[in-house]
Image 1 (cartoon, one colour):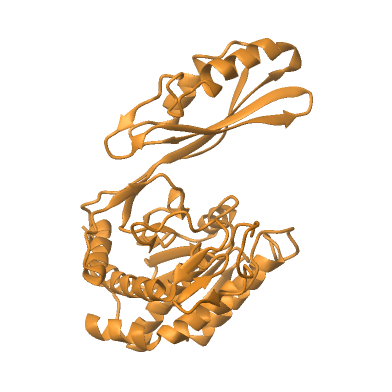
Image 2 (cartoon, rainbow, N blue to C red):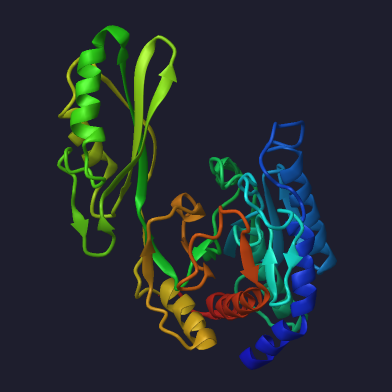
Length: 373
């Protein structure tokens, strides 16, 4: 059955690439909200067109309050969930091709904002499920492809979704790298502020503990080197305009062996009474058993398709897995493919999109028909 499924992916590959280009050509950078368009007209157009495409492929679809779209295969309350996003970062300068042209060169490399991050991989998942549907493969659990719209600027789409819908029992987000990522660092951002008359105390704290730091939070006593995640990171340091107050922001990328409470207490221990500390936001680390059913299943699919080592890895990045329960980052970038997603001339190869679809198709069948530990 799996060999037949992989052949089906090859058969529909041209149709898949055409569908991906259709959605990638939509400018879906977040803009001013309008009625029924919480993240702007472009993102809403991308969501509606993607759901239209899913309908054309024969899926039941749902638009959850113009924030998350769903393409459904199968019935039942507990579902396997695969969540990507249709919003993209701003275009920026330095493009060799029109950024929403979906230009494909003679080597099959497709250039467009969103081709990698994250429309191409998300639609590869949709077409993987389409191949399963067309072959009439039965699954024990229904599968939902979830189309997010606010991943790049706040996760407000997913926060709303979780208020009105239950999360999947298992799944992934195709918005990171291969092999399967079993753990993500935590991310927290802080602000120190004070009145202008406390400028000397403020400057001393910023200079002594933030600006003179080695990048690993050593001046705060937080410079650990985790065996799985690597070094603690302190970054994104900047002055902020608070009108009549002084403010300075900074953030941490921290391993699962540390908590945000530990970080907060370390900062507070260095503050004088004149300074105010605020945690602007925090996303706890994501951590899965790399030998558990979910990671092992995705690892097996990756290894069977690529013939390479699929030992689960960690990441310094942040994905929907930060707040969506039960999902891990999985694909689409292969080892060695870095620095593509948010840069000019964002690209993805036709053959890699097809390879992703094959990995995702096997993963769907094995997850949906397997037995969870």
